[in-house]
Length: 442
Image 1 (tube, rainbow, N blue to C red):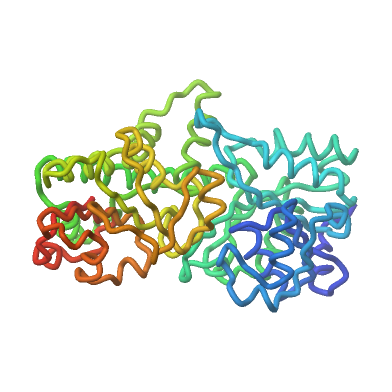
Image 2 (image 1 turned 180 degrees about the vertical axis):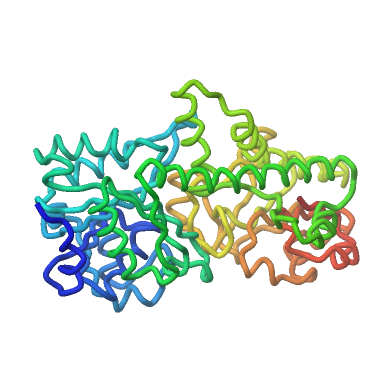
């Protein structure tokens, strides 16, 4: 069976490409490919599919483009039979014990297998540890389809590198790692992705290598941020400003520019566990990666403890204080709340019988309550605070003046007793000092 005609079939309009999973990763891919080829966009979430059909982009990744795209959005898995090139972009979270949760990718494999046409190339983009695509996904697809991989259909892997909320490093501007099970599939996969990736593709020799690239690149970032978080803890104990230390360090040409912070989301806070889990199965226990994870996973509690300490030193009883948290998404200017570490701040405060009030206009209220049990409060309904924690660097928070920040506090509270925590170092040190407020920043 020939597989080297798929690219030409897509370009000519004779063949279709399908996306399985239309979240923060899959939907932008579908929209971009639809500018050039015929695309079927499939997701099991009918509500999400209907929103896309009606021109509503709840991910905020493509904005107005959703209203004009030619993607054929569907919740009917049988439509996948029409495609000769299928891209799987479903989430790969971790279980409560930080082991890989492969249920979404296994479910997607079953769906693909049940609706696979002979002569199709299937490419996984979901982040997995090396070996998952060939050792777990392929057998499921073979079983469900009754078709033999390598003869009736072929497999490849191209890790997603989309950065949610990033308007600079977008899908087309990030070089794409591509791989296939053999030379024929690898060449065809490269040609198909080259249709949309302006930055170009980077072929690697096999699927396991491509899988490793993704988990390694995010583990590297995680470790670097963990180092900065450890520096922030040390600087806090030394009573010196972390931001000023890093500003000085970054004047050197070989400084890496990483900053401390809450490390959440669906990639950096998750992928290292996929890598270390694979290593454990081979008898190697991580010495660095897991320790980096330990540091980063502790930062929410560290921030909450700092808030409690500052409130006590300001002369208030934390249990009776009104604490307001600005932001719950895992990063700024993005509606994505997956694996948000702001929740760790909230949970730590609750251990001390402090029930903080949280606001975030970017986040979905229903998702925040369903996932974390957090009821978001509208900005205009916020009570006056004793302590304000600016946890996420949304542009509307970043642009606030000291006067606007002070308006969030109880009027009768002296400035010296108004406790402000600037987790992202959004505000200038000279302005914070001049405000007279009691402040702390990571």
